[in-house]
Length: 102
Image 1: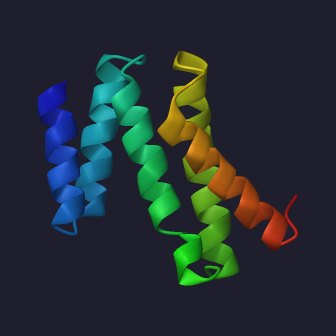
Image 2: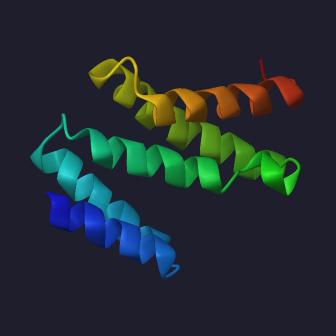
């Protein structure tokens, strides 16, 4: 599983997000409790709607929220104290509040 996670991270760094997503999803299909795959997907979707970009266009944010939040919530389900997932969910919540979605 680590090989697929590592390959997904490399694909993201090289600018091939679709291939990275496929690798993360392969890991989840093989082991639905493999936390790193959920975290990788959640963080990817968070990164495409980063508040550092001020606020992303509405359609990008909607897509990012609908795709990314469930993955980060799954991480918290598997590890309630996982800092990276908690921070990611907090950032998503901030963006929801700032855009009137919450």
